[in-house]
Length: 357
Image (tube, rainbow, N blue to C red; front, side):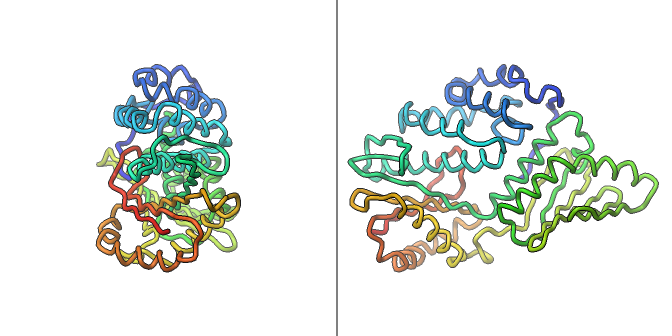
């Protein structure tokens, strides 16, 4: 994603000063209504609350779009449903990656609730037991399949949390970030990557800046991390026994943009979905459905996040995908809705929905 390099920064000593955020937060009535307590909670328990994209938007007072959509969701689903949905964020742990996953999961529940109403499920009520919504005596459970690119979004947010801190000027110099090669980017390895970025990245960049002035190259290998640097360029490889990732940092003095790119192609091979991977993910979600359900009054809803560049392929091959999934799930004992989402976010883009019963 491409953003402007931030010019409104916050010092490390003020990072957890709620008053600084509050003066902007109160300008937006719906964000204040639903997120004031949540943001205060994040500031209190997160070492760096700016790893959450909402907190960076608050710093910039860039919340008009968010505020307008919260108003829209309130009108669609009701105040109590919206409040009960977002209140679940207060129960998350003290790591931004957990909060980001939960936040996107909750947004997908809201998305599903809005679409369920269009499918005839009126008087929806948010529940907290073994489902997410209740209507007409039916329990609807919403599950979301995030593709691998969401792990890169987490890495991007942690990096941006650092560049918004005033003292980290050295990191803002390297404004082109590219992840080219990786292997087995699973949850445990992602945690190792994030720990390195949070604990060690600034330290190594500071050491590079000190040494590169008198040397053409900088190279170090330590604790499963390899770093190679020359003037204006840093390559960091983090690895363990079965996984690795290479992150390239380049300095572009002529640009005021912060550009974060990956080679990730999510579930697609070229422009097509990899249905084998999709089906494995669907199996995981259906196993979750089967744990605590009464099949007579249960409905499953599975959101499948898709990259915008794959949207046209899915629309053009909709009937084929539907038939393949229908055949795959023909023995299921309860209806399942599939919703292909062009993007998880605070905007209702046209989803692609079908039911298998």
